[in-house]
Length: 330
Image (cartoon, rainbow, N blue to C red; front, side):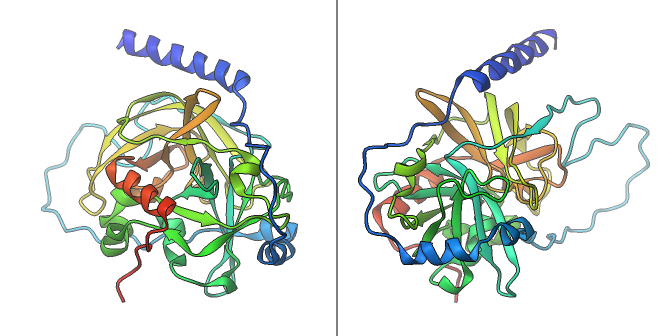
């Protein structure tokens, strides 16, 4: 236990140093912008500071039913919460800041016209146009629906759009077929998705404008230090927190699978899809996003991510090669 405590302390100290010395991934910078994009111009006008501030987190899916259990004898042992902080667990604090260019938030309107938001990050791709978020944020936008005003705003803060807004391409949302088929709970292990964007109103491609993080898959559950970033719904600024991820095996039959677990305070609705970042040469790499088990966690202190493995890499390959995206069963 002493050795583990010392390792965690050293990892936390290293994380603090890295946060202060490692900047965002540099943008390409040399690319020549294309023609102005009228769709982005329309979205830029639609998403005023007031509308962005009023946007609500993506609605939570209904709670999955659980099978009844046989009554048991009362226990004198202290109950350990299945989803949330353990007794006495250290919870790293979070802080608001102005964000980094490759991390931002989606804005869209739901079927009833209500503004919605979810966190996301730009991942490196051949066409410099790809965003990673949670499947439960993106799944309702499969196919074509330009009237729903879906766009990505990198480094959104204080009502500002420092790099403009990047519309999501028609038929550009990629969510695993397993997530559509199984649903948010039974398919929790597939709670991730990609969105292919169009240029902003000035004709700039996303990654050329803001840079990107690297997508890492197959790296396991244990990572330190981890920098987690997310946008709480209605907050003027994103949050960041320095922590570490561990392995979590679901004890809820309704949400099966193994997940990354991370302790960070203050990550409430709207932070879904926010990246879990590790230092990488030249910037950052993403090893998880807020989602998965209980679609990211039922408390503000503990978050989860679906494990990034072959299914994540296959979905990335589909999104970057223009393969037809999966869709809900008709």
